Length: 240
Image (cartoon, rainbow, N blue to C red; front, side, top):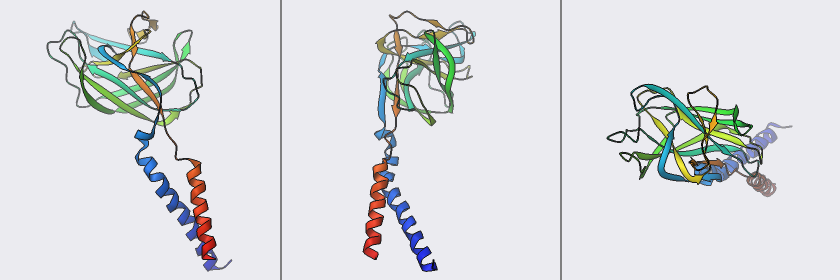
């Protein structure tokens, strides 16, 4: 093999990389827009429940509570992103509680254990997740502002179809902030753990479930790679 042939082959490999990058870049840039919605429970904007590992309750004492919502998907698409709605503060406050300048949030997925959250099968802790004010307020107390949180998973959760799981999103360790995940307009209840590390229990099914979404990505298809290889082969044929 001559040096000329080696260089020629490297040029071909380089061209493949360039073509693939050009074809896939728009997909990567639009990943958020191209994601596929797997499951949605819309916000009701009427109530929400504390999901916070450290908060100040209405009597000025320290407290903590977790809530989790049951979900079952019909196919086995990986879960790679979640969005959920929430707000801050108490309905008995005189003014809305401001969102904290910095916060740590946690997203968990639990296996089901006899109709309650069981073992943790996925967990991600996020410092300052994407948080956007929606422009809406919650119809309780001083009218706290609603926020939409957007969390991408560094590794997707490979869930099994037609299998029940439980979702939890909570704020961690900030006594000065009281996070509440919003209730959806869908009735069915949820699970609550109060105090933390005690047994989970179910709320009445007349209560709203939690407001959140699951997303899976639209991949840069292997068809694009095949197209890139085809272009390179045509280019090589022309060069001959």
